[in-house]
Structure formats: C-alpha cells, structure tokens
Length: 81
Image (tube, rainbow, N blue to C red; front, top):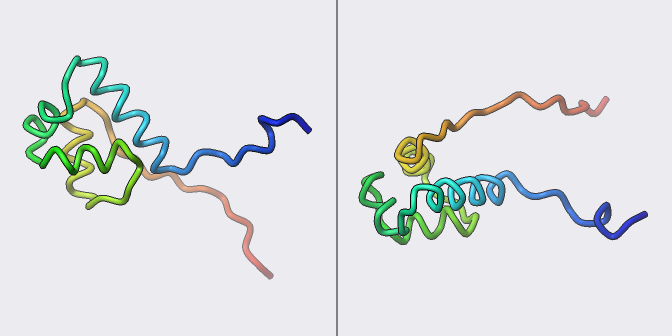
C-alpha cells in the first residue's frame, strides 16, 4: 500500500474551503473584499477557508459572490440489516 492511499480522504468542508480559496484567489480578492461582496464578516470568510463550520446561509452568500453553486448530492450508503 502506498503512503498516499493511507491518507484519509478530504472532508467535504476541506474541499469547500479549497474551492473558496481558489475562486477568491482567481478573482484577486482579499478575504476582506470577498466578505464585502458576500455581505459577511472577514472572520466568516476565514472560517470557511479554514474548513470550519459556518452557517449555511453565509456559506451560500460566499459561494454566490464567487459564482459557485452549493449542491447536495445523494450518496449511496449501505444500510445495516
């Protein structure tokens, strides 16, 4: 088994954090500028980019300001019998 395959897969919040950071950087915005565009505080943007839990409504505002879409996909999970 390679070292990479032993690493845990990224959490959904860490993937969201990466996408938000990348989209903000692509626009050349600071965290403060993104906060202004989204109507949230700069610490909220920092929490999202750190992968911390945030209010869903605030996360949606940040995503919309960046032209991103939040989507919930159904994941097949085996049921215990």
